[in-house]
Image (cartoon, rainbow, N blue to C red; front, side, top):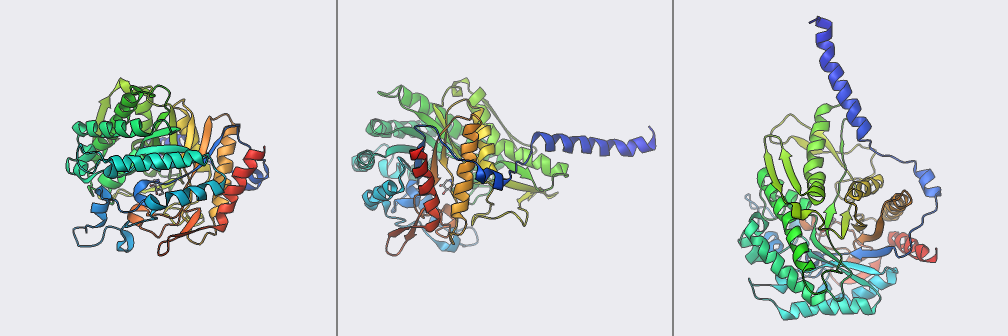
Length: 465
Ligand code: IFM
């Protein structure tokens, strides 16, 4: 072969590959001056809400997470930032009535919260009627305030006995999850507007089984793929089981999927593209594909290869809950132990979490989940902003991006801000301030943040339309 052609060929291939990927995966960026000049409108019946999760707000939980918080790593270091424990958190278990008033004051009409399985079934097979009664009272109090309860059955936490059995590592354990879900459903279904089976399965598995930052602290890519499958299979079984119960045929049941669009750090670097696509596949696509086709194909070259097929997965969504906060930018490395890092450009305006304010991400994510062909609820979106100097902008722009997606024809039915109030942010402890209400954890006083007023304005304006 001609020597010149020989050297040109790989270069041409690289160029074609990079151009193709860049064209088919644009990193959407809008002109915000123009976006802000557009009126914002929402369809009639659009649901506005706020969200929390049991372990993060209720207090006094004894579950897989409390065990984790109270343990140390192999070097005797605390697991949680600042060695914090969830403790009594926001004492929401006892203060829920006051908190419902706070929800009402925001003008929203829905509250997404989760059931703490370890309180409902503290020992295997022993259900605590008082705990179920508590959640029933929460639902009744919400309804009396004109607020629709949206219930999540599994939001990262479960009883210690379930963890000791291997939790979602073992397919046989799914029957426990189904049995617990049925009990909760029977007790609460008459009040609940939307049921979310599992919150963010890919986050739970990534943190607990891939990078080991959450319980059970494992770092095993193959097991990550297996556990993710079992969670998805758990969703399917719970959906089918609840549909078969009294009132199940009219209940609205879905799963909550977190979507992080992935972008390469260097758009000219094919390796960055490759890793970006692998991560996008395992984090975002695999679960969505399973729900549309029943085919599960979790693959990380040389690290994980998990394949399953379950046609019964198709049709197990009455809606999709979609959580989005930002995007992830991937810088690849030729290091088998650390083949990528998440890095952002210096000009990207950051939240207090390790990701930037990037409102186009929610639009991209809506587009993604719209492929499922079911109504979409944004079940979480919000900012950690201790200084409260970016909250109003974040709220305004992300909600504008939701409005734009609706105008373009995407079937978004509701938006829940994360979170009602500051709470325990898992391995980040209490430093991350996501709350519309600031919480003083010494006195348990709540105070509306200034930046949250933008949310109240948008909700109120949408009602006047
Ligand atoms: O606090 C979490 C929540 O539990 C799950 N979704 C993301 C939130 C903010 O990180």
